[in-house]
Length: 562
Image (tube, rainbow, N blue to C red):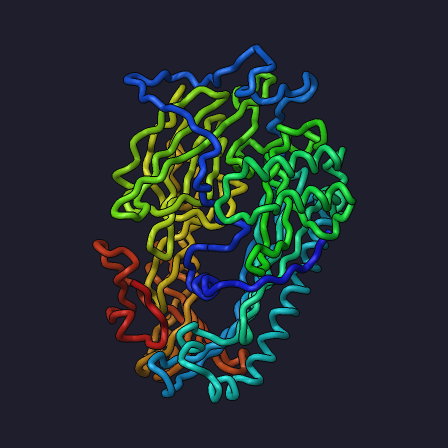
């Protein structure tokens, strides 16, 4: 099932062009002022080394999760689907002397996912058709923007130039789950053409047939499922959720009005999406995370009790995870909560509290690294080689946010350290993107291909090529040598005139090269070139040089943030 949903976006969408943090309603979590769970946590002098989860034989104990049926146990028997991922980019920019910022830019970017796992021909065909449709949409809008480019410059305002571009079209796929059981993702179509708006399409596919799954394939009792959704009206953890949202969702479910809702699934939750108008008339897209194994009376657990070897769990809308952590046949209840610390009236840190089945777990001291964190964001609990690792995002005043890592160790979560921002949803811990801030052709972020399947859970880079997009104008004529695919000089060269718009494709840290493409109205005239990259070790990717000259001396028109 798919349906396009429009909503107005804030100026944060422009920041996403340069890799800044996401602020859409469907992903951002912030604790309500009133706490939903309060748990006293005491530090133990010598944490136990076993990883047993506390259990309670009294099935009426409210701190214990529901008992999993005897014939349903967790099976780690699924293969993660693999993809070849590419981004097709169309860009063009020109100088303008009308404003302080000298570059005006139009563009369209489009995700392309090609299934790399053999044996799923129908699914591969579905994804190929979707990729072709997305590319056609992206190319069509770009050609429209390009044909009207001169008129855009004539009518542009200072704000248009500050926002990089008055016109762009992006097609992006965001995957929640990809294994032999389910492929679940949504497509975001973002347009700026005098205003901001996004359309969303939701896809849930059976990889074995390539056919779309309906909510009724997973939910077995819609009335009971509606009750489960409505319960989050009083228990939800989100500060920005309007009153009555979950009641409205539940009403649609009871009435069979499924065309008013959309859904996706991850490893442990059903995600129900709905467009909703709040009390002041703003329309946004909201989501309810429903724990699947807490509601086996109305949800088919077969879609959730099968996992890959390594997988990711997320809290539901009450900030709880229901899972059989020690695989003893009982569903355990994991609760995470936090208190805000204030300095001169502003939140500057958080005290995190964790309990399992009502028993408080000690949390390692992370405050030295989290000072200045004014909000907590995404929470991921990953199972890697049978061990549980907790990643908590902290919002800071920077284009990328840190994640704080805690490893489960007996009755405590030991603090390991922090890492750079995890890029979107890490459904496969062995293949994630890690975003680090970079200043080449504009403030943004590099995407480092990484694995979290390491000894302590900190990321290990698995590819030396880091993607980063950015557009700028050359300040002078450059005669540049070309390189082979393995980074060796070819002896050939390219001349790039002053004022040429160029796009950064990324950098290769092993080869020590940055990769660029010249941009022309006729894209067939675009040329690729490389420049030798030098990084100041004290500033990492804040201070870089190309062929011995500084980033800011060679390119102009790009935007930078403090």
